[in-house]
Figure (cartoon, rainbow, N blue to C red):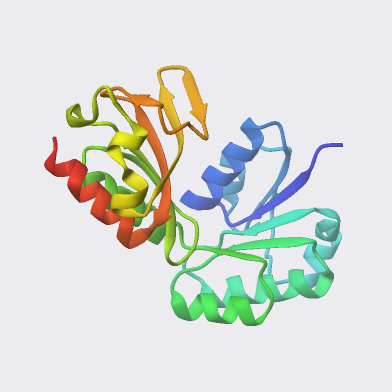
Length: 221
């Protein structure tokens, strides 16, 4: 049986969530108070409905409690976002993911029991900043407040050297968990795995250690 998702708020973030979920073949209910936005997504998702998500009776009539995962992507209206999350929680929705506008908003959402809180603008800002600072960084993903996973492009200085020769773990405290070369991927590579210029190293480690490695690689360009 397909997993059922509901997305409340069809701004840029909510809209892109709807499209991504629909592209993966999921059943999606899209909800917004704005008729134009709802019409825009009526051909993208399974159902698109004009509704006020702060009205408990309306949410009940939509059967929102039966959805395994509800994403609250309401934009600027913090009050609507908080009230909607509270109603969903009280109705017993299995999993609630909410877009937070700021740290204060996040604190309130945590107190009322949101399962996952995301800051799309802040998170994307961090990823893009790493890509701007170093041409070697392809992607950057935060795992926790202090640890991340990053994709780095191997430089000319790394060409034809093995992982043991590069000694990234000892020098920077980071672990190379995989190496991508064209269509091939070497997961948990051995110490004698040779690296070619242009290979993509998937590295996991503390943020400070990754930053040191990024700077060193940027200097080698």
